[in-house]
Amino acid sequence: MKRIMYVSTVAKSLPEEEISAISRSSSKNNRKIGVTGILLSAHEFFFQILEGEEVVVDRLLERIRRDPRHRDLMILKAEMGVTERLFPNWSMRTIRLGEANGMILKAVRIMLENITQSHRIIERYTQPSVLQFLTQGLNPLEIPVKKTRKIILFGDMVGFSIMSQKFPVEEVTAVVNAYLDVCCRRIVQHGGEVTKYIGDCVMAHFPPDYADAAIEACLEALDDVRRLRRVAGQCQPMNLLYCGFGLSEGEVIQGNIGSAIKMDYTVLGDTVNLAAQLEALTRTIRRALALSEPVQQNAKGSWPFANVGQFALKRQGELSTVYSLDDPLVTEFKVIEELTREIRE
Image 1 (cartoon, rainbow, N blue to C red):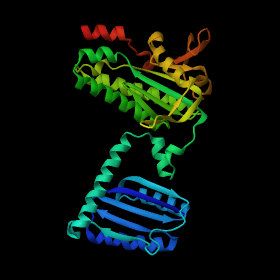
Image 2 (image 1 turned 180 degrees about the vertical axis):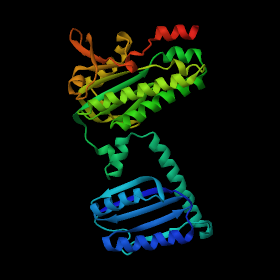
Image 3 (image 1 turned 90 degrees about the vertical axis):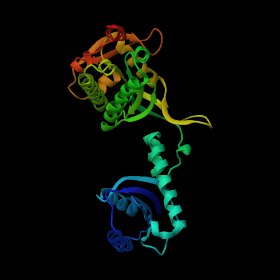
């Protein structure tokens, strides 16, 4: 069997009668499909434990996700291979933790609300892969390291150092956050996963057959950055925001890397290093996107590829062909020297 614990936010305030109706309906339906559990209602939060056959619980959870009365559903814990139910006699017991339930239940309500808030904050700092393992009932620390193929993306702002020297820290931070926000949104929209932020740099990966999606994510991020510059007006440093992207494809090591104090579930290897080198190369080729040959070869779309030359990237003496795109979003690019002149002017 499978047991899940989740929390969700109530879309709108529900009266006592409607919560009672939800309880009766859930109890009736769960009895038919062999699901047991408990529902705690605490102000704007629903806490629920569901247990039953895995397929049945997953199907029920998906239906709950689509229920317009819920939003921001978050799995707190999932357990697989459950052999004994916690609530064998409750097809769905509902407890309303309101102000009138006494001091003990009030304390429980406050504790649950704080746990939810803390979990949502931690979620913002946690990689999606780790959260996915947790929702599947897996311990991320026990996931073995593996070799796999990925498309690696590196993105970095141009001229961050000079920008941080010339403008107030609040303005520079706003620019960095705006840049990382558009990068993250476009990467996730196209099936990638953001692995980490390194200062003003973003690192992400895509499945190996997502070359077109990775290219599209870069182009849309560049379009968003251009739009930020255009609406900035005289507000520097936003109108000085330019960036470069590097895409490589190949074998990486994926898994838990770190120490007993701090652990990352990340990717590393020559392919990762190559993506970082390609991003740095954008300053040399004066284009906002640099691609390795495997990415160019695996792309199936009608992209206006441009061979920008051969460069010693992986190892000294070994030349690699580098590609870019003949696209205005890519060629509209400024290097640090140009940005420095604009700042001084």
